[in-house]
Image 1 (cartoon, each protein chain N blue to C red):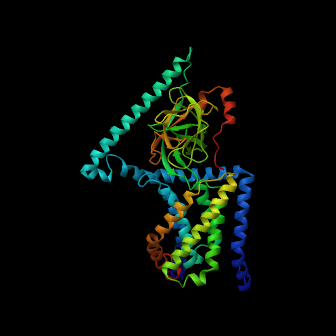
Image 2: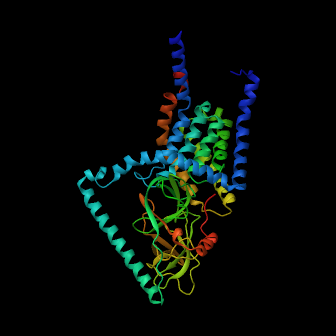
Image 3: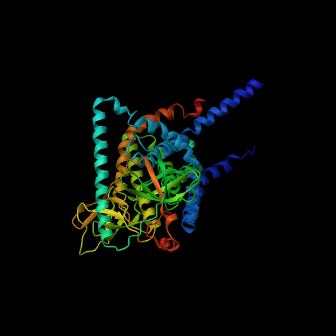
Length: 288
Length: 177
């Protein structure tokens, strides 16, 4: 073993912190110069932790599931669960009705309706919340045989939740619609006015660039728009709610703070090459 | 002779385990606070817990969190919380540098002053964090989450400190090995 004299050890111990600080600052510069470094490292960490998260989240799932919930031992809790289920069902039907009304309106305006290709999908379990102070994202498991889930659209029973921004062999990172960097083209209400839905890190993403002559109506349904080529037309997201004067936001149908199981739809596979090219200019950014 | 070597080996392993407890606990907290389900938005505590732990261990047992380990912790936290690469190592090292510089004065103070110093430390860290995120993302971010984080950390510290002190005096003390 290498033996060092006391003065050398003292100098080394004093130099460690400044050297590490310089190294960390170098990491920031390197991360900005080549964003792939961050993406590759983040992917590696996600992949390494995915099996652990899968194991750890299982007891939690069992604990909070309807049949085994701690609260279910208390008699009153079952009634709350029943009402919650009924409420969720009613909300689902409401979103279905609003979506059908919007679709019906758009169908009436078209002579030849071309249906959207049926996308491939699989169900994924949320295994970790990987958001931070200025990020809203979750990690989900993906089956081993799924190829290229990048850009797949994540939905829960209520509506759109986000989009896959990074996919590995075992896991995929989903940028939620509430993330500050999320920008999704949407159409609003029965007439399908276009706008941009921008995440704020809060529970209700804001609506931007809506036509000034026709402001979004309070309670109108917000659906995805095919502009940009990543999202297909007509997936339900939420309803319009005014946070203040001229400040419309979207209340998502999906419970964004209690995501457990998601469906990942691979619409990109069904799209033609022209729309794939269009997707290159998509406005949704990924965090570096 | 063999018994002696074996005993020394166990002793060294015990010392190593005790010395690495703080870093291990922080890593476990970063990982397990991300498990969704039991409490909503519990993942938001990851940054706060890490800052508080680095502050505490640097103040009371600086040898347990050497700078290279702090860099690894920061890197891990940054990668898991989608923060720009390298920001968290710098923030944690700045906390460490600040605490080490004022350690001789701080360590003799009572709980209230140490708590106040932590709040000041968290405010400065959050200000750095905010500036770094704004510059690296080329955007003006909302400032309210920063105050929320500092407020949360300030309230959480008195709850967490008995656990940290118990660990400091017991399982994280290599001299007890």
